[in-house]
Amino acid sequence: MHTVDALLRAALEQAADAIMLTDVSGVIQYVNAAFERMSGYGRGEVLGHHVRLLKSGQHQAVFYRALWSTLCDGRVWSGVFVNRHKDGRLYEDQTVISPVRNDAGAVVAYCAVKRDVTDQRQAERQLRQAQRLDAIGRLAGGVAHDVNNALMTIMGHAEMLEQRLCQAKEASEELAEIKGACDRTAALTRQLLAFGRRQVRDLMVVDANRVVVGIEKMLRRLLGEEIRLALVPSPRPALVRFEAGQLEQIVMALAVRAREVMPGGGTFTVAVGNAISGPPEGDLTLGSHARAGGIQVRVADTGCPVDGDALERIFEPFPVTVRQPWDAGLALATAHALVTQSGGHIAVKSAPGDGTTFTIWLPSATPEAVAATARGQGPRRLSGSETVLLAEDEDGVRELVRAGLTRLGYRVIAAPDGATALERAAAQAGGIDLLITDVVMPGMPARELADRLRALHPTAKVVYMSGYSDAAIGEQGGPPPGAAFLQKPFTPETLARRVREVLG
Image 1 (cartoon, rainbow, N blue to C red):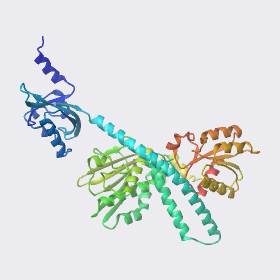
Image 2: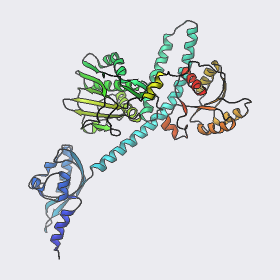
Image 3: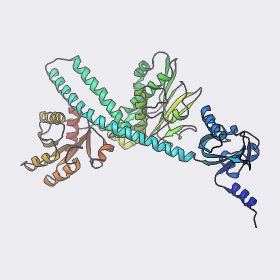
Image 4: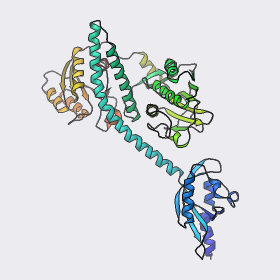
């Protein structure tokens, strides 16, 4: 027969949770085997030592004052400690500390029961971050959709006006400023969509070396005279498939951030090379694990280091713990979204004396992609005589597209919604060669409109357009994979080329 004392000792030693007994001053009197596994310390290394041995420096003094105030009042304290393992790494434990009383009712010791919740807490933080980013991304996508529709009208009419002025051999600086402002606003909406993973990817083959060298003057103006710029291209072409113009935006965003963290000067380095390994140890990789191979773009500054929670939140659009301007926060969030959704990886490492280094891994362009780019960007002939059915609920956009295609010789049948488009298609004596439809319209989703039109005109081809993007419109019954798509805002020339590509 086992005595109760023996069973109690066995239960303490074999408990899954760590158990620690201290005296009233916090000196450790007993720890069990689970404590040794969790902390890395053997009991001989902690017995007789104060519990501050485990302190990580992550808690402020007010945290400990509240803890000891609770215990000294004879009450039970519960909370989460961030403690330091014997090997130096941090871990989190959910702890309940109970006063232990003698027969007279006086507190003579404290019993702490601890459970390692590091992985659980990390998963919860990642989930909360994902939920925050998703909510902001949805809002950004909606705003970008409305702005893109307005920009579409402004840009289209500005381009038509410019063509008239060119025919009259006149020029307008004001018109050029309007178009420039529209381009900058369109770039911002692309950032909003990309941040929310709601942008249709327009991948093309780019040489990372040429990108880096091509923005040298812009970088020097942006960084100022006190910051030294070092560009290190790779000895061979570094061809990747990436968003048109977005690699430049990522490097520029990191330059904006570097200028803020190096107010007294420093060095900003952009280096391109072959990625022969994954992320160095100590990097915080956001996204899936980086693999060997591909192209590596390393962007480093010698400014103030980023640590702890700030490092984890550096790719959030509005990181309250990171000293950087609003546009840099959004740009860094966009950079992370662009890189990961393009099959790449981005990591950041920061340490005192070394500054901060962002390392971007991008997959190399395949020979097929390089060959496709070399063959050209589309047809030269933009005019046509085919019949086009246009369904668009925004009056300004609908009129702009109709006018642009009509000038090129197309016969355009315009409608404000899907039901009206079907009615006019059914009344059409000849065939419908092409349907151009907005994805999100009242009454009837674009995909249903396309299916029902093909029942009337089986050979009709389809081009979808939207100020939203693939992720957002997928929730609205969007186009099938591989369908021809136009991301708003687009220019009349872009529209004409896409129409010609689809019609052949």
